[in-house]
Image (cartoon, rainbow, N blue to C red; front, side):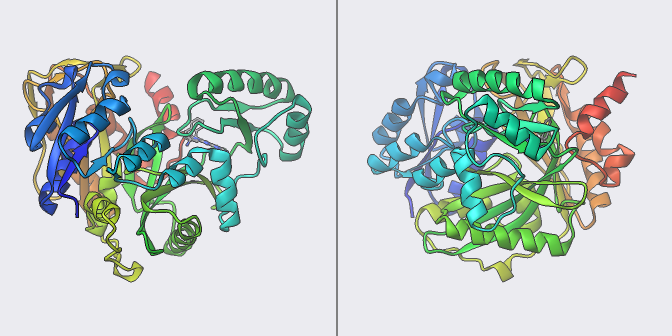
Length: 450
Ligand code: MV4
């Protein structure tokens, strides 16, 4: 096992990782930027090192600063958290070449899943159903029009190096698809340094369902249920829950087993998430794979009782999966509301600044993963996520009721947050019935305007 882990991240996830390390008896090193001097992750870690200026590009994304910090502190391993360098294959490679264990999949795993075209091809070979679309990157105008004719409108163009909704274009006609290809290529070149675009049939009003998997270095793999992440705004998730109200045990098992088969086939290591779209008819399609721990991992922890961070660390240390599929039992239901320092009444505008006062909810079946405290200053440089409120219960209705009271208890002055907005969603009759899809929020916001 590792004796010291450097946490290459900030905020709630840095604290979450430190907690797992403490329970495993591993020493921790926090890194921080000049904007993060008063952050709690510095306090909770055994050591802390400043790695640069406030902009992420000069601190949390600066590979050489982070590697130097790991070498100076004699750290055995680096946990990247989510975002920043978590899915950067060259960072994982640099770690390995410096003799520092990267806590996550292999650089090859990251590279393969980072190329969304290659990821789909790999999963197709492993037997996963895919959304009808182009086989590789789109080249000529003629090819695009021929393919559009074959697949039919509406269509969606996506960047090979994209993911998470960046650089996507939905098209409804021949005239649009040709110009959309050009702008998508230019946008992808600027954003990712790779202009390759692929095409898919656009699935209307799908649900976004993802399967959590875990694999060791010896060919063993398991799935840990699913999360329904259909409540999104501009490709940012707001609310996630498990189990998904949209799938039954039969489909759950089928999806899970297919995922396990696929990760074994590609020799995947550590934890990961496979994203699917579920259409109105109940067909599911593999979309992409995330090779990191995700923001919404706590809902899975709450229903399985498995600590995914400890699992990540022990798997990276070369331990075997201690749990077999038959040992995984999903008990009850869980939901997560993301609390962002954003103003829902003003286009979700970020709200950096001083928190004069806050109160964090608690009580039975309420978990809050957060780094904020009364007197904490939210810097303007990073993601606006300030807390994750997670509740669990025997039934979905019970879990929702607990969330309602937890959100009411979440007090914060004078910063505006998404907490009241989350409450509106979880008390919405359609949401309560489990009747929602990825377009739900847009419709909900339109109705609110009236
Ligand atoms: C899609 C889709 C429909 N059809 N792909 C969004 C995030 C990224 N992971 C992929 N996403 C989608 N891909 C096909 N073939 C619908 C989404 C999608 C979405 C698209 C447009 C506007 C809002 C959306 C919200 C969630 C998912």
